[in-house]
Image (tube, rainbow, N blue to C red):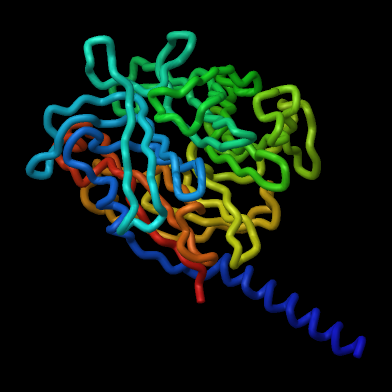
Length: 369
C-alpha cells in the first residue's frame, strides 16, 4: 500500500511538471472578444482611452481606470469634435459582455468642458491612472505623475512621481470621490534609475502585493515588488520589498525579479493552473502579448510564452501596441483570462482619423489542452 501511494504521488507530480513544461513551450489558445470591444466603442462622449486597468468594487461591479482619454464623437470612422483629457474611469455592471452595462466618468472644468477626473495635489503635470485595489472599505489607486518634455513626438513625456490615492467612499460615482493623495516615498526618478509602483496590484493571503518597474539607463524595464498588510497599505512604514529570497524594509535592496517588462502588466492567480500568471506586452511595445507563470507572486517566473499577436501592428508601420494585462474578475472559466491591450500610432492625426485605434481591445486566453 505504501509503495502504491508513493507511485501515485510521483505520477501526479510528473503530470503537474509536464503541464507546467507544456505551458512554457506551447501556444495558449486565444481569440478576440468582439462583444467586449463593442461594449466600449462608444460614438458620443467617451470615445477611447488607454491604460485599461480594472478593479473589483463589489460582486458584479467593476471599476475601469483609464489614462489619456478622448471625449467627443465618432462619425464615419473618425473622431470629431474631440478633446483629450489625461484620465477617466468607468463602471461596468455585470461580467458577461452581452448583458453588461458601462457608464463612463470624467471631470469638468470651470467652464463645463471635459477635464481629467483626478489631478495632482501639488499642481504639477497630470496623472495617468495605474492599478488599484479595495481594502477594508477603501479604494487605493496608484497614480503616475507625468510632465511634458521638449520631445515633440508622442513620447514627449516623463514620469516624475508616483502617488497613492486613498478613496474613502469608493462606491460613490468617481467625480464624487473623497480622495487623499500621498506621494510614495520609495518611487525614484533620476538620470540613472527610475523606480515606479502600481504596474499591477494583487491582494492575497492578507497582503497587498504592489508590482512595479525599475528602469536603468540603457537597459529595459525589470519587475520589482513591494508588499503591505491589507490593513496597512496606506502606511508606508509597513511596506516591505522583495529581495531574491526574503523581504526587507530597505527599498534600495529590491531585487529584479523578471526582465523584458512593460510599464503596465498584470499578475493574477489562475485556478485551473494553480499558479500565478504574468501577462504583459513584450518589452513594453510589441505585437506580442506574453505570459509567464510562477508558484508565488514573486516568482520564480518561467520563460515567456507568446499568447497573442496584435493584428493592428501589421496594419501600418506607424501603429504600435502596448499595455497588455489580464482582468481575472471577468474570466468566464477557471482556465481562462480576459486580456486587454491598446493600439496607438506614432502619428497623432492617425488616431483621430482612424477610430479603429485607441480602445480597449479584448482577447480571451485559455490554457492549452
